[in-house]
Length: 448
Image 1 (spheres, rainbow, N blue to C red):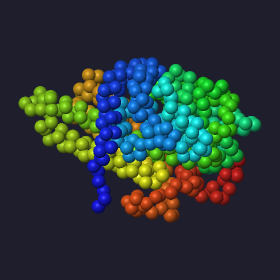
Image 2: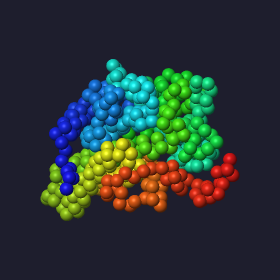
Image 3: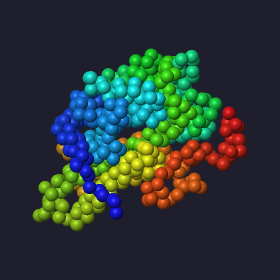
Image 4: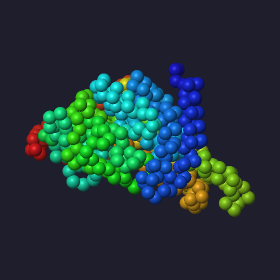
């Protein structure tokens, strides 16, 4: 069988480069940054490490080589990401979001847009370039995220883009934009999901547009978070912000729903390997603790059955999670970076399993895992982020899986056979209206 889990010499080189950077450059700045109460300052404390990551080719490693990016395969990127996430998944998120902001340009942009936006991102002499992904919206009101693909025109994404001559005028609020920039005045570019047609729902009326730093009418506010404190997330307010029509991604016009689903499927194995990295770090620290401490007995804790059995289970789950992440990334590479089903399945399964593993490590270490002398509190906070960000497992990710497998044409053996599983608009919007069947009987017209 042509199945081999052995990394190639080039992949081991990538892994070593990422590990050396993570342990030598990143690790020294994380403890203080994570404890910094000001979210902007915490983020800024990682800027030096980011510049080093940019110079080393890590920050733009996922972008196409023909436009100046590193050209790493999804699998190679996942291998590198584990090493960074084992030190700090927040910083890794900053790097990942360059992909979330710019991969839609590679997929849906014109040749001119690819050369302009990706080219600028990969040729910044300062090494500080940031791109952002701006899709989610604040809870309440007419906006929302979890039901972004609702077929009803009054539901889902609320931010609007109205064309006026050579510009789109953007109005609305976005929350959880993946970067507010190093100075809080915005990232160099952000790819925003907008409603370009307010007469139809999210399966038809959404588009994607690149918004450049310095655009008048945009304000940013750093969000204070429990986890991933070393990365930036922002509330972004658009008040009659004028963006050139030429910045609309042509392949995404009316297909902003596809951009969201594809982006979060592409990042699925990356979020999964981030969870693996966090759980791996917690496991290694717990094992060290258990071998050095007796808890008052005459033998190290690891010699007791309960501790040994649980730690063995944790180790096995980490191994299986890593291979699932590799498998999903490999599937992306084989199928033109489409894995709407497998990417979601991987993120759901791995991130939730790894959260349990981190907590099991804390249980075995005992009350000492609560002490700031150790890192378990940080591990738990970081592990808690992963199932709920990047398209939350409850809602967006599980609904995508549901939509695919509910189709009459779905082949339940497709993934096993490594066949391509298409994702169509007919697979969206499941569970977003009370009676989906009524949609075809005129519910959309009634809602209008």
